[in-house]
Amino acid sequence: MVTKLHYKVEAWFGDVIVATFPCFLVTEETQRALQKMGFSGATFADAEVTTSEEFQEDQPGLELPHFVWLKVNGKAGQDDFGIAVPFRLVISERVLDLLESLGIFVAIVEPYDDE
Image (tube, rainbow, N blue to C red; front, side, top):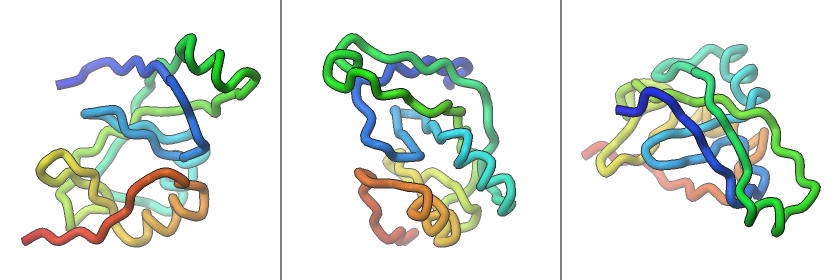
């Protein structure tokens, strides 16, 4: 169980949600949008986010947005956020629509089948 999250970014391509096994981060803008819409299956916590040497060399001058830890605790297929085996994030259609509107450029999105 993860109790403190320190994420070192090696590259960032603009996605508002970032997966780092077994945790997820979202931008503060995404956090605010989720809170405004109301959602189930997750809470937020602080995370320490730093950049690696590779990031600084490969993406010089790129300023990261502030990220927060998205702590998923919902049931896949029932809540807006859930985890399915083998540790795959499952989100509702309305959360997907929100994330797409904010920017998920490299995320792989597939339909969820709970059978």
